[in-house]
Image 1 (cartoon, rainbow, N blue to C red):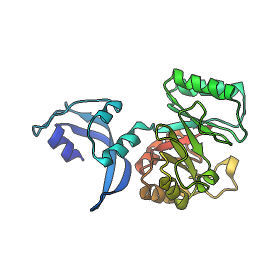
Image 2 (image 1 turned 90 degrees about the horizontal axis):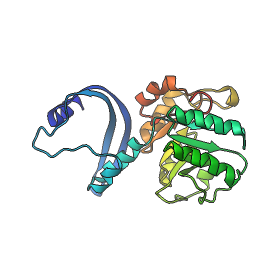
Image 3 (image 1 turned 180 degrees about the vertical axis):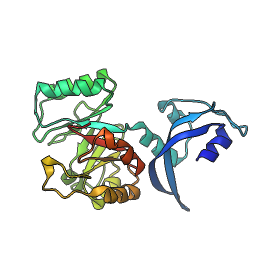
Length: 256
């Protein structure tokens, strides 16, 4: 990575981390890609071998003719390193206040989770708040119609296993809760955009559920082509560890 970026762009990588690995099958071959984040470098990027180069936003990349693998990579790098899940205070103003605090702090994805249906007024209130900060609202609520005003949906593992295809349009984010390799594989089969994997560590609220542990989580991440967020005892303090094993990032309620 360091050699290629120096030879082709004239930049020296100072800090990088493995973001993801993926397998992609062409008609005549299978390629394995290692995707890295370059967090710090020195030098001014320019074509060192006569090639044209330019900076552009993620949205502008859609105007270029890209390799099939690049489109998946662009999707992965557009997702943030962490997202926040709302607590179980259904219809509570305190959730709105906490959401506002997280958005001010820089949270770019909010998962509105509820075990009971939420009225459209409440959903719309949270959605408009997220829009004010250019953040995405993902709904994890029962009785999904895939028509609510939001930026995407999050499926429970039971909902996942009841499906054999993607339930919503590609212009919406689709996340899935998974707890093992089989569920992670099925999420990929229905073309989910990302998965959450839990519990990596034991938590007081789910002390009866055996923790996967970091080794098992790493194995599942390595075998999945989807971005993986780790849950269960996660905090921003372990974000670097999560990134080092190829996770997209971490997610949670109280410590994110």
